[in-house]
Length: 393
Image (cartoon, rainbow, N blue to C red; front, side, top):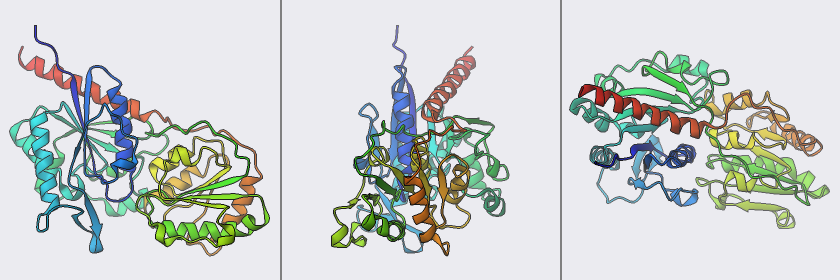
């Protein structure tokens, strides 16, 4: 009697700015790998894989990495000159997906892929009748709902509509009662099946109270990290000079240490880290000042320490909206970086936070989204298998 092969899940994500997509994908893959009936792989062009805790059970198909240059163009990081890196990536995704024949293909965030690199795969799957089920994964929100209403329109390109039509389902890495990402896409595209699986977030390590109060600042991926550092440093400098206090700043993978400088007299009190996981950075934090990217925000919000969120100053984008939502929770402040009194407000928030008692927040959303996503993908694969069996009856 032939052995039944494991269900195959292929998880795709792109990463040109930040590590949010790959971090989320790695967590879902690890949850899927816990199941004996599942074989999971990741396909990505992320060039910072060495900075992540990767599960050895999950092989990674690495694509040639790309980066964004002036004019929002994508170019190769290390491919041969003259080769169109996005065309090459698109071919490799199609070739690998066809050859490995996964039962379910999950695309994080971008259903067409980076610069449309999934379109060849989706088009071939539709025209050749591949058995693979394609599923779209959405974080809690991509853009402020009011901004989305003005900018998101139904795709007019027939090739794009054909590619999107391959998707049989979508997963929201959120809860409907918290932030509903499906709402803003109703006029653009949504597959027939849409499910909420909860937030995909790493659990913070058990906290350790530091001997010296420590303010930890997280720049996320590092975009505008130097500006955030200057703001925090100026706000905290009087406190550093007059109190027993330390400042730790995590620059992030896309930041540059060359843009950060600390006066010699304060260097023993200020720790600069090029990169560090959120869990490690905040383990002994007395309070946290942070950008509001999906992964960072939902990890720190699980702690009991005071938090000041400083969203990236990009009108209409996700961080401002997420910050306002999380700002409703206990012991959380929100400060706009471009505000006229931002530095003064931040100093007051730090003083207030350091003088407050720890408060464990009651979260209005689930944080087991990785497990929920993995279970739902397996269910979708099982539905496909039953449909195939029925076709032979």
